Length: 259
Image 1 (tube, rainbow, N blue to C red):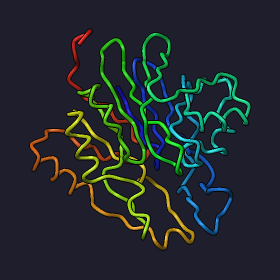
Image 2: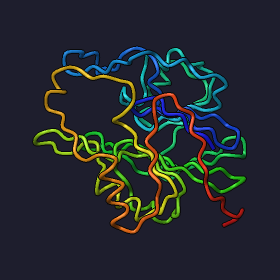
Image 3: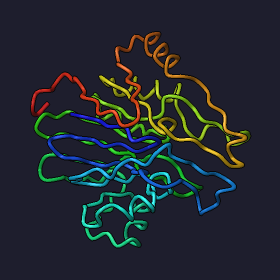
């Protein structure tokens, strides 16, 4: 199993000989509603569009997860699995194979990878987006991905999970509070799932941010502080802090088939 971090929320997961692209922002800038003055993310340089992608997996419909300039460049015949909100984005762009996953629904990719949607991040008062559990069926190895740090207690039934990709530090705004939740929330998740490996997402990579909103963003915690939290709570989970573009081979203890 290999993971490549492509900055912000974007990952390339190689699992069961399949290449799954998660929440890709690979080219151009990142804005919300084309409001550059409010918030703009810029890349140091664009990532090349990966080749031989078997599936695009979208957790949310917001631009930092379903990034229209990137999705326009990707082959529209690549199958997509998406939250209901993200599915609307790729439908409008003309993608031809779209599977919408509501919470607790599953999708199987070529009999080798099972993907299950869990309740993820609340977006507004009524919309809850997706987190995903990916299972490599030949080995039963599992990966859980949720990009904002909101974790459903229903995940406990899936424990143990081998790899967790989620925020490990917090991003906060005055009055609003944390909107990217790490720290104690990530620790609680580690206690639930007992992962072999955790990797941070959402707040890293070779990107810079500008605009009015960035005047108020605050970061709380660090990767080293999170490692200390794990140690204080007698958790042996390894924390890997990936660099942009690095392809990481995960050394995982395999489970017996059927466990």
